[in-house]
Length: 209
Ligand code: URA
Image 1 (cartoon, rainbow, N blue to C red):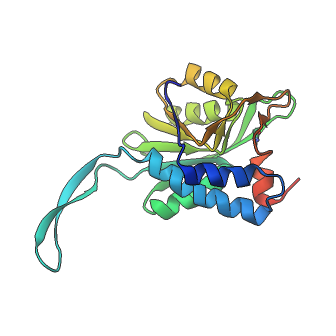
Image 2: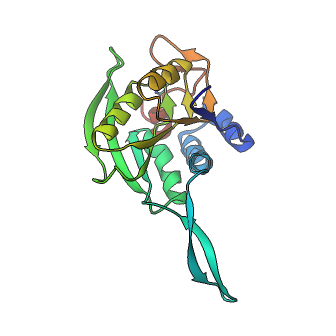
């Protein structure tokens, strides 16, 4: 599918199966989400540009590769985005972080914003928006709308599961934003849940409901 990368690494797929299993505990789910986010982060940053800098090893001087450009921004869509954020910060500890508070009105399925805090200079940075579930894509579209209003021009969207309906909606509004996901599932149900999915990611992660 154009603009969508499915991360089909066997470790990702194996961990995802355990996360989908309704018998998996809250602690297990959280641990797996952290582990999987490391692997997804590796993929979403695979083509980052490098430059070199001169260093001295114990043996000699060398021109060694180092990341080019300004620090990345990880933009977490609250609250479930935080489950992906932690592992990503393990891999890229210098990244800046944006938080976007959106909740889903259960009647209309529309995204309502209640919080937004981001670094002020988004223009010159790669912004990776993280939210485990791309379902209707209403939250993802609203999050990217807001980040673009605040100056972001270079964005990627990273999730764990995507519904075909969500991908189509997101791509129709933000065709310039590539999507990275561990799976494209079958469909959305009438309540806006991804099927077969894994249930409510926030509830599974935090033991709520
Ligand atoms: N959000 C979730 O947490 N799960 C879904 O299936 C859809 C949206």
